[in-house]
Image (spheres, rainbow, N blue to C red):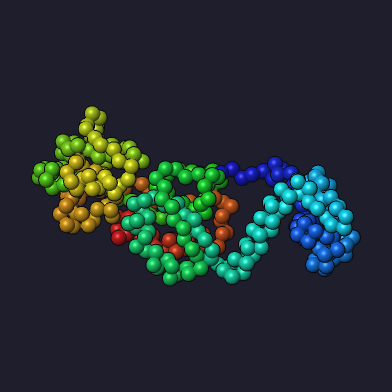
Length: 309
């Protein structure tokens, strides 16, 4: 996300915090005298701060009603936002004081990666980073840090994201698999033989079969196929004999070891992409993210999902 130009943020709408504090105190107490006593200031100082605030934002915030200060309609609306801002700043200080190296971490993850790779390792993360509260949300489509409240995301593939930084995690090895009921001996040894089976596709990886078969200059045009939006459903379809699927090796190790799926094309596997941790540049020094970056760097140290589980 492009960095916002500071000149596009008029300073007149960002008054000093002491002015806002004086405004909030007068609004709450209904009296300059009582607000001044609470803030340990003189009545004149509080009056001047409120007056300067009104001049800077160009709105009348109070009218005097006998001996009391009464908010104008504009002042009532402004007070709600100011109080939210003050609470936000105050709570940020409390959280930082209580947990300087932690806090919440909102993370976008791919469903299969989150369930099969990340989730089994989370007990170690919790033990290693007890101050971080991890909030995971699954995403199968490209994420947008400008519209979604994520501190970071785990992304598959390569590419650049404006206004972000990224950390390489690991490669992903994929294999072609099918139910043993569909497979004849030649399919176990020769990739070319996979063309005789219906091919299952994942929406987010439309070129998976082409990439896997292109090593042998094999085209896949005109082959029957079924499409899925998640690996889990595609793997189950392959188990029940709907067709052959290209899947990350780590997702089907159980099915292969139990004989419910067999690998096509011999021991041939392919690196089809890589996983990266991506975060907006503005979050670079966010304590919870820094803790997670260190932990996942060690957890992904094998460098390949083909060997990571």
